[in-house]
Image 1 (cartoon, helix red, strand yellow):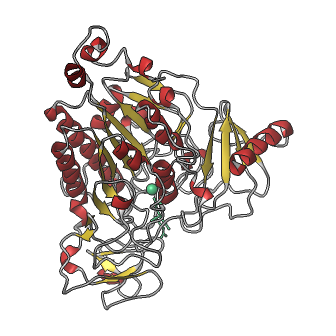
Image 2 (cartoon, rainbow, N blue to C red):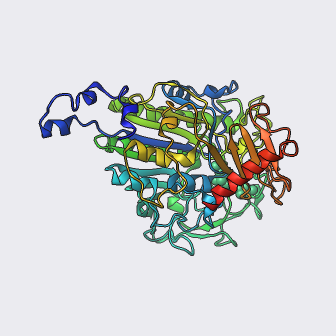
Image 3 (cartoon, rainbow, N blue to C red):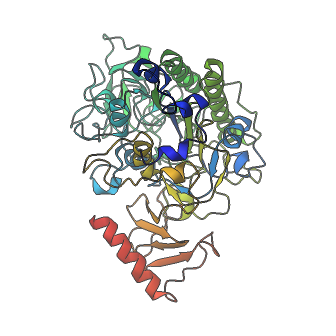
Amino acid sequence: MKHLSNLLPYLPSTVLLIGCGSPSKQEAKNDQPQKPNVIYLIADDLGIGDLSCYGATKVSTPNIDRLAGQGMQFTNAYATSSTSTPSRFGLLTGMYPWRQENTGIAPGNSELIIDTACVTMADMFKEEGYYTGAVGKWHLGLGPKGGTDFNHEIKPNTQDIGFNYEFIIPATVDRVPCVFVENAHVVGLDPKDPITVNYDHKVGDWPTGLENPELAKMKPSQGHNNTIVNGIPRIGWMTGGKSALWVDEDIADVITGKAKDFIVSHKNEPFFLYMGTQDVHVPRVPHPRFAGKSGLGPRGDVILQLDWTVGEIMHTLDSLNIADNTIFVLCSDNGPVIDDGYQDQAFELLNGHTPMKHYRGGKYSAFDAGTRIPFIVRWPNGIKPGKQQALFSMIDVYASFAALLNHELPAGVAPDSRDQLNNFLGTDTIGCDYVVQQNLNNTLSIIQNNWKYIEPSDKPALEYWTKMEMGNSPKPQLYNLSTDPSEKENIAEAHPDKVKELSALLNEVKGA
Ligand code: NG6
Ligand code: CA
């Protein structure tokens, strides 16, 4: 019960009365507060500078601003990784993704990369009596080793790692197959038109971006020249499954609708909803009601669409009168990127908008903008609104929720996740001791007391496609984030002791 005292001031008065009188067993049971619902909404490639509550002035996100205003807004929160698959893996398993092979950006036909024996955060919630659901972007693979067969029951799926319900985009919206999967089945699939997917070579006779660039309504700037689906050339080749193909403009509506249905159906029991939006990942294809509305081109328009999604979820909670007892987390999986492979004029139309704020690098990078993320936690019953400047990492979400529920984690479960509940709730302003991040090339960095150390790496300084600065250097790098938040000056040579200390700490974490 070590954390209940933290919550007492915020819990409804009926809760405080428990133990004060001598209620009969039955009454006591009825008086037990329902465990808080949890909605964990992870946006895709959203930058800390993309939201008006974080200082953006060229785009306005009123719903997310309201969420932040009613909750705890973190200014020093990090994802474990600068790309999607490892970041989500770390969140759901509580284990650093770089401890396991095969946790890099997953293709659309990847096997499920979380071992079914792993006790995931969803398993933990389920054990605590929650109804659990995964809606939207998944990107952790599905099916057995050797790849996913989309034409039959897809096993193992999210339901084998703790989720009662799934309605998911298997990988990313720029990867085939362009279909939704609901409870192990491709939605709307005609068995007479089976799906074939391949990531090595062309399958079927659908046009590709390489052979028929004139058929692409959205042109690639990098890669993205395989099978054309809905006029958009994707990564990977597919054929079949025509009746199951998603409509890109409708994806936000579809997954928001599924998330709302899930909440409505489970309003009377504690629920855990893990929701991944496709926004603001490429291809950025807003619904017509958002197209052209931001003035910043499609990238800005899908930020508005994301804000709408958050507003819809908030309204749903309000209409059911369950907002106060729902912990609503909003964050990103990794840092932002401007041109990520399609000619959508994201650069040309920036108009002074700064997705990375003043931080160096971006998605893929070991520099701060690679993993520094917007992170908002709203829980009216348990959190006094405010700003949280303490250091926080997504790796610690799992153990923090476990602490909230007084759930003992068996040895070996969520091995890297630390109980940072008071940090998560904003009552501990000191924060965690250190955070460890990973870039696209598995180069690790560690931050402690505002010192950031990036380990030496012989990997390229720039990412191949985006030319993003990766933060890779054969020399050790040390930055003082309090005086140099933009990581302009490597001061490793002037502070050999600090370098030694942080590299030793990083090695200790690696060896743990
Ligand atoms: C890259 C893709 C990029 C994006 C990324 C994964 C190319 C040229 N680039 O390889 O567009 O899909 O993978 O993004 O193909 S993530 O946010 O899901 O990790
Ligand atoms: Ca991402």
